[in-house]
Length: 386
Picture (tube, rainbow, N blue to C red):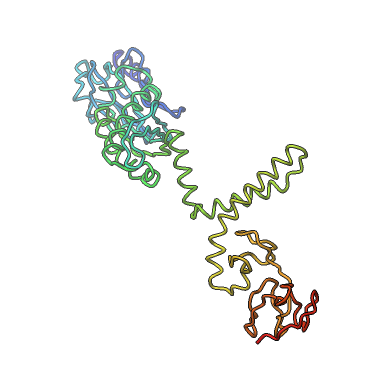
């Protein structure tokens, strides 16, 4: 073996390298392998792991892209050699090239949100302002395009380096999609999945020019302004209450109970009692119609008693008529002719029909007692009435 062959073999052993990248981070998209003097020697080993791509850049241009696998750089079967054309000095001559490792895995749980409210026209509330936020998953779909359009000559590129630009693009597409879909604000929660798919399709049209792809897009929440949410809560409360009149009656009963339980003295007690009486009157008016309607199917004697003076119906146990003030309970007197019990003041007997007006003496006009044969005042004989 000649001296030049020995030097050649020693140089070959010295120049052999292993080009690989072990990613210990969670958010690195691109990493430039530190090649000394940008010189790659013949026989260098290139190891590309799953979810990686190795991109060779020669003289400022992307020369080739290698997917997962193990490669040996020599002059025989590596496509990059024919493209770079750097072997004119022999099989072990070095060539200059930059090697970029691109992480092609999915970067999950990337956040997005609207920094300012989005103005939209809603069918229920008119013009509303919406805020929204969510998450998405991203991956590099075309490593060559990503290096050309985004990363450039950066030696290290993280998700934070492009996060703000992506968020702005997402918010723009979100606003456009919501406006085109014309979904009412009350129905947005039921359409989150459909909204996410529509926005993802729109975003990928833009992101493809960066060599990126959004694999998942999630809408976690779309919120309305506080005043609109308050109106929605009131609307939902009224729907849950059902009959507003019954709810008012229930509120009146609660107020009356609270007034009755008030233990304060002096003015506090008077105010509580006054409130109780006022509410009691409201309750009486509120319940009056229901009480009258419910009493139609029951016996009249169980629900009310007619006033003996004006005939108006009153509640059982009432001592004075609520309409005319007349006394509800009256004394009983016997009929002047047959002796049957009649209410005091009756003008005719309900049994025999006789007039109950007291007979007067034909001589002195004094009132005669029932059944009297002579006047107590003048002694005149009483003529028998037919």
